[in-house]
Image 1 (cartoon, rainbow, N blue to C red):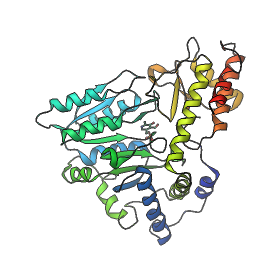
Image 2 (cartoon, protein in one colour; image 1 turned 120 degrees about the horizontal axis):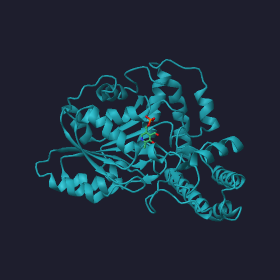
Image 3 (cartoon, protein in one colour; image 1 turned 45 degrees about the vertical axis):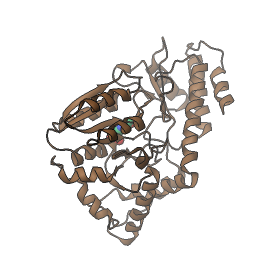
Length: 374
Ligand SMILES: Cc1ncc(COP(=O)(O)O)c(C=O)c1O
């Protein structure tokens, strides 16, 4: 029950275990063709969605180095560990970074972006860079509204980390006017780690033609050229591609709406369970990510609880990051997760708290609240 790597369905594992095939073979080309179409469906875009062998951060870095140029000014949202990562990537390429912050556990305020963009009379801001689902805190940022403000600015593009939102909630890339969307296989995709994905709008490709930041492995031009021939510029992780095709087949069978509804249900049931157990939620109400619930138990060492849940029930919860270590634990309900998994996790947390003498509510209140919700 961590927010990635997420559980992998049997069908996907079986596909993964096939013997590798030549990445220039007709057989592999047909997998690339099929997965490209499936990825467009998932991103709700008519544009290109390219597959990179690497983790989500590779797609994030590709988004920056392919659309920006030396010294460009960017606005970067930072309300958690992954927002911080965007700032680090942008600074690594010596961009001029203006950081828009919110306290961990709180969402970014779209009005802060609007104000900075309206103040930018000379159109110096070239990109607005935002994490949609901030996995470190369980907050979902209002990417749709931020993107609207970017469109109104007219010159900047929107670069979004949708690593734990894609496949968990609605991210209609074209409808929201997003320009670059980055994600990774080990999250909502239900696939092991190894592939990342970058979707690019026409505006992003226009910026790509002008971009002068150094790049080679992550230069998206060769990816686009080879994608038009159902291929890759380099040897991709072919077995992860097998898994991806099988997982996207499953997702298409379930349907986007059902996937999003399932995640929303699991999120609401988890919140109900934690609240009924007297455990405060870390993320601000109405801004909670459907992929992950961050819990901030008072007077309880979250690391001790995590360790005991793992030992007693073999269920892994995620810990708090940086200053939240020991103060927060996080329950991932992203990807191949069922009602049963959620109920089991809640019951395990409740039973463990009881055994540690840390349960301050009536035994069974948490599981009852979640079951009632379901
Ligand atoms: C919001 C977010 N962004 C980016 C990443 C990318 O990380 P990685 O490069 O490890 O796939 C993660 C992974 O946990 C994430 O949750």
